[in-house]
Image 1: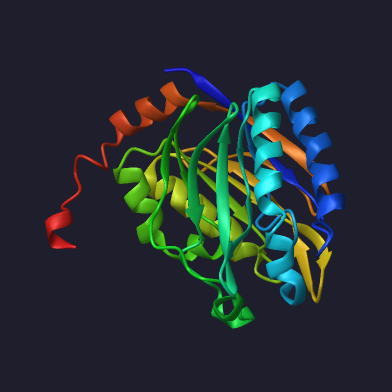
Image 2 (image 1 turned 30 degrees about the vertical axis):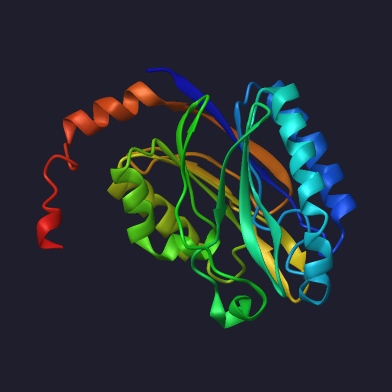
Length: 258
């Protein structure tokens, strides 16, 4: 088994300014590719932010952005994960379009909507998970609030995920929940987690960054601070297999009882 060079691209998403966000991502993707990355994770709703008043209009640009992401993924030999608004009648989906070296490897629409901030009023919820067979391995994806629902990550792990990628806009003051839940998902499922958060003020909220790359033992391989930037780390698939053999949690499961 080989290894993956994974990157999380953390930045201050400009709410409603698709052109500025896309310009930032173009440059950042090239930067991490030059560092050898073959997997890049972007924040949740990275193209537009949660610009509720114009969200349906902004969502109309997503199809064109997906085409550009596919072209960039082909040019840079990257698997790219990050969510954007997808049109759906009078609402939108919060959707990951998983780009893999020029092809669309899968689509995931956020299942769990954060009702505390009214996501359920503007967004439609997805109804299926995504485990994608990609050029670098089996990638599972969840989005932000999904992190609080361990059943989803467990299902992806049981179905064979080697890495779970998490685009997020996780605000202050819940930094410790973020760090603890990411490590928990990695430990309990014995896989790698690449979680990318937004940073800085966005609308009425403030985001703390702290994007993380965590190994199957829960060790933090790389962690960003509160400002913009990228973190890169190597995911050793053989080390994951060895750890799973050493502590065979999946073999010892008794799903008929729970």
